[in-house]
Length: 487
Image (cartoon, rainbow, N blue to C red):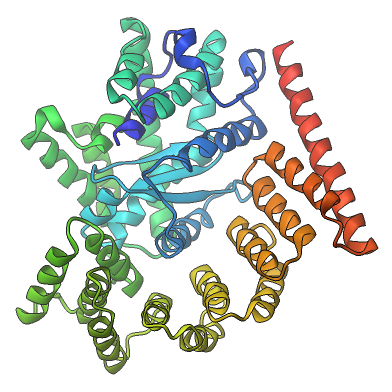
């Protein structure tokens, strides 16, 4: 998949493009046609939500709660140091071997698996996230769109076209990117270099205040530049979408040299996430061979736990659950502690037919990692596998009291209500999952099915009726905003 480098280039690199052909624009998310309106934070967020509906359907979307959870912890740790506390962020991962990351409207930041694997340290990965966060907090996209005047809608449509079209034809995205006139492209490229320098400066501050090694920023970009020189015609996507100049590198180096040195050790989670991603590449047997070789040669740079975790994941993928469980035993011997180890241990029990044992592992882990979403999901799943839906529904209800905006838990709750034969509650939970992802029409459909289920009491029926009115009002408000934007 090569769509996202082009999507980012359109917004932060190329800028204002010629309007896409009508045939290409068919099926685009409704962006409200904000040609006459200021690209406000609310419009920006709504635009991002619309595009994310398509991104989540892409085969490259990596819905792994552990990997996305880790990325969001690092990203939100950085974002917490920003001056704009109102800005919301969502960080997500795409399965793509190219080295790229990108910021989209509304605080949605994507990272390719190839970039995570290429990062030499956690501080390097954090540096990339800090840079992308800064593009958002400095409102670079909004400033570009607002400066463009009549080209506002064109730019938004071009972004969506690149995202949707390149799923089936990368060449189409290239064609869209080449559609602008030369002078306009050059002006926007110059403008984006200013953005890049500002994102470097602001991102460096986020990195430092978050406790990471600020040298991770210069280290990453310098290696990208060297890589780009070696492969001029196939440079990393990050270089194509983030123009890197000698001036930028020099400015970055000067800022870093003037600040005190602070070393930051990689977290175990960083190593475990990279090991898990490495296992998912290529054939399972090859992954087993690689991690066995690293253990035999003691090639683990002090992170033996990460290598053994990788081997356990590889063995599991190769259908050798019992052998994988022995590696988990070694992780226990090493006293390695991480929620990722607990979910792996539980999964291995479940794969060997012991769902009750899996649930016991996760119940014991939950008090130690109360905010870990992967453990919560796995616990519900193991309870359902063990034939304990009453226990599972209790877990979902308690969890949603603390995390009411988690669509994945609402989906698990819907599955649990279905096993219990509670149709009203099943459709109501599905409706919440849809609504939280911005899919209002399917949410209305599910609530209407809940109204007709006939198995709820007066109180439950009243809740469904009230929620249906709320969602319909939200749909009407969105339609009104879109209509007003056209005036």
